[in-house]
Image 1: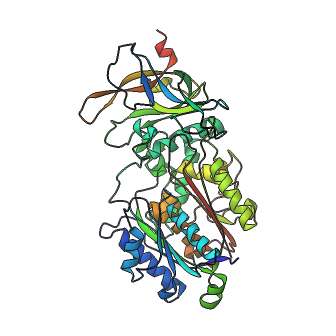
Image 2 (image 1 turned 60 degrees about the vertical axis):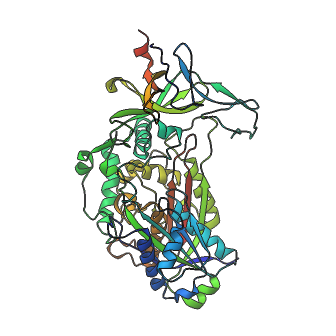
Length: 380
Length: 138
């Protein structure tokens, strides 16, 4: 069976794009990925498009925009893991031997769809009593503080770290450095979370070109990065209440990925994780086994997750700093991994990185721990 | 407690009795005894489809909570939202009516029926809120 390689990446600026839509953004990212791979776009045999709120046939609209209409196209909706799931589906098509060259694109024009807090689907019993995504994470933050003694100031160090990384990323939604005081003085959203603890409403798109061993050798050997694992799970229904400060869903999805990639958490050099809220980064990296349970806040305080630290977390700025265009997010994480592993990450470059991990997790439904979770491992 | 005649805001999830009391409704697996909220078609523990619909207890323990200060237009902010663990081993989210200064993780909570929203024609509906048990003792 062939390995799968990422040979081209593209990404729009993340932020507010009042003069564009999800088609424009997806097309721009796709064309950039083709140019980055340096290939004739006619080599592309199939396409996968991740998005959440962009309506029917979003992927077909993107392909029509760039002259590639007619390809087999699959639209993928999997909440905040939509883009990552599109990459996974694309990688399966290559691994199965069906295609040698495929593109996965994730796009979202969220500012035209939402203002303020995202909520679960209106049919959900928790939405009916007023659940919002910030409030669910706020409740997890309060419980984590109760169990592990994390302070509000410690939690604030996460948006500070990520937004300061984003200040180094020319494509990030936020480019301004912030302080702990800025976080603590920002508007309360759902106690104890404040505005700087929440990822913004962002427009943006990203795309990656995947190739088989054969195609990679022929067309783009030198800058390819291997997609060593791309795993997916959905949350299970608990038969009794479990801790909301630990994520079995993240742990299981990561274990699948470590096994597939033939590595352990100790081999990961850096990661992009789904920091939709400050507390989410804590829960993710502990669920991934990269830090012990209850230990991440102190590790952040010691600088271990900084760009120059033991294990940089969200060097791109993460969802908090780079922004969170739902469908675009999972693909953009892989774009960052590829740029870091190629040594093309500019002034946020992590020296000598060989193994990068990306984690997405999204969606909320009553009674399940989480909806969709993906982990991708890229190696150079 | 005042009698509430308005229909439930979530039929099938909240029972409203003649005497004005009420409870949340879910499933109990006849095979392994696991409980679920809301009603399920099959048990996630043993996959049995032999589930009975039951009413849950009305007292539980506060697992965690938040004060929501930004929400959708249907909900007037701020409001307190929390998860309560019930003896049937189900964790259910609901709004909380309490003095924030006295609210703490681990405290006993009671489910009470209260007016909660309106139907499409503007008629009032009955919902539930959790309140600290101490404040219901007198």
